[in-house]
Structures are given as structure tokens and as C-alpha cells.
Image (tube, rainbow, N blue to C red; front, top):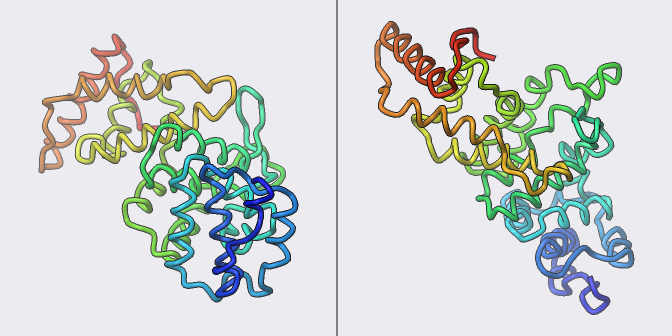
Length: 290
């Protein structure tokens, strides 16, 4: 931020310094840009000893939404991290910075830095709030993976689910945000591994993520996965191939109706798998869901 914009909002500082810090961080996600070092030092000095304990959770959530829905959400979380406030307001997210995750190019990424790039990609795509919130929290189960396993994160889904649920309860996060975040926790990495060679698991994945019953949420999941894919710098301008593949599979299943009975449901699943296999020109259409 320029020097003329580098002071905390005076009215908020007088009423509640912690809220002033949070508001400035949220505003930095807009056109003003990241706070400079002088402003970060001032934010650090103004941060109360009890952090954000005196602010209603609903108010904190409003400011988080303000930043998440701005044009450069990463600025908010970089500012909060830079002044020491992120670990107080979102300790689950703060713990991800410095934690490695396996990738293909480069071979490892810092999860915290990566999620900031995902957030900015979501903003570039004008993604709705559930997508941006899911991008923020879907990796929280990876912060304390056993060091001997890094950069792989075994059983992070089991660790992540209660953390996401607890965070949502703490702030009163809308159901749509919570549901997509939990779905992304369980399924995003599986979406990235989708292959046309095995059509059966593809059909099972479509059913599992609600592609037939909740098409809007499915589209949000595809948007999130695409943002996660393009957050790697060499993929920034690429189309997401797995979304294309799943779009072909979903179209192939059109007209195959869901059924109530268990036996009939199995028949529906087999029919969908066969339809996907035909669309993929694949003979290996059966097999357990991944």
C-alpha cells in the first residue's frame, strides 16, 4: 500500500484495534495491494494480547468473507501472516505454511503458499464463496503429518474433517461452504487422478460427488479442482483436463435415471459405467471405486 493508505482505519482502531487489523487485511485484498513493512509493523504493535477474542465470531467471518471475495484474496492472508495475526484467527490455516506437499512440477510445494495461489486463481475465475472457502481450508489435515512421511500426507482426510467442521462451527460458516469444503477434502485428489482407462471408478466418482443430484455443487468442485491445477505456475493458462474428461462422462450418463431399490441402483451404476466406457472407448469399465 502507498504511504497515504498505510495507516490502520482510525475509527476501527479506536473502537477495537483487532477489528481494525482484520479490516485492513481484508481491504488489502482489494485494489489497495498488500500492506508495506511499516504498516505490518504497526498492525503487529496494535494487535491486542488476547488477539481476536473480543470480536464476535460472526464479525470475524464477515471480514474473512470481505477478503475472500476480493480480487486478490492472498493479500489478506499474507497481511495477517505478516503481522502475526493469522495464527490467532485461523490457526488451522497458519499451520500449513512451511509444510511441503508432493507435486510434479516442481516436485514439492509449500502448502500455504500454494493455497494462496489457488485463492487468487479462484478470484480470477470469479468463483463463488464456497469455492474460495474450500480452497482455504481443504488442506488443514496436512499440517501435522508425520515428518517421516513428508511430503506425502497419509490419513489427512481423517484429520482434516473435524478441523473443518470445528472451524465452520466457530464462525457460523454457511452450509454450502462447509459441504463443498468437506467434499473437496475427500475428493479433490481423487478427481486429479481420474483416468479414462477405468470407466467404472469414474462413474462411481460422479455418483459419490453428487454430479447427478447436485449439479451446481459438482460444478463448484470442478472449478475448485481446476483452480488447484492452475495454481502451479507452468499450468496457469492451461485447461483442466480432468474436468473435460468428467464432463464427457457426465454427458454420457444423461438419461440413465436413479432408482430407489438396491438391486435397481446397482443396475443403474452398471449402466452408467458402461455408458462412460463407451464414451471413453474403454474396455476396462468395471472395478472398485478409488
